[in-house]
Image (tube, helix red, strand yellow):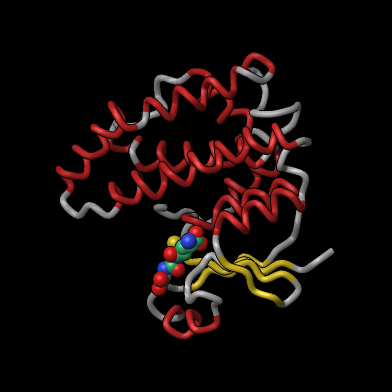
Length: 211
Ligand SMILES: N[C@@H](CCC(=O)N[C@@H](CS)C(=O)NCC(=O)O)C(=O)O
């Protein structure tokens, strides 16, 4: 079994899905959290593209968060059992990336609090509904929405949706703008993932961070 080191900052951010995969798989890894102010200027020079997340596998460093996610998901059998299941999973992974990069980050970096809440409201009312509709549709297509996205067990798609929902609930929820609040189906999936023993243990043990 290879040895894994995951380098990122002291937040969940773009590394959390990789952490969730390894936790769900029961895989030991070194969770290296770099201080952005004191350590990053020198640590940066050790990273392949001077950015993180970086996964070190047996001493070799790899970058690009979603390449790392896909590698780990395949490694730990969380990528479905055939090409069609993988397509469903990949579609959801791209949705996860799109709403994070295109929407969440823009709201997060808005400095003006009133504008930030306005952006959240707009996103909840018009930006998010098409994504939620598709996430619900895909879930309904497998086991009438009562289980996970594909097959009979959790995959990286479920972990990605759980991770996205956790972030939105925590961050937009405190402004009364949780975009998932009306979705009984997705909230039930969220609970199923949150109750997986390894995920529940990690949610309790991981450092409490804003993002
Ligand atoms: N496409 C890359 C983006 C990596 C990236 O921009 N990482 C940010 C943190 S999320 C970073 O390292 N920022 C620090 C810097 O650029 O100095 C990925 O998905 O991993």
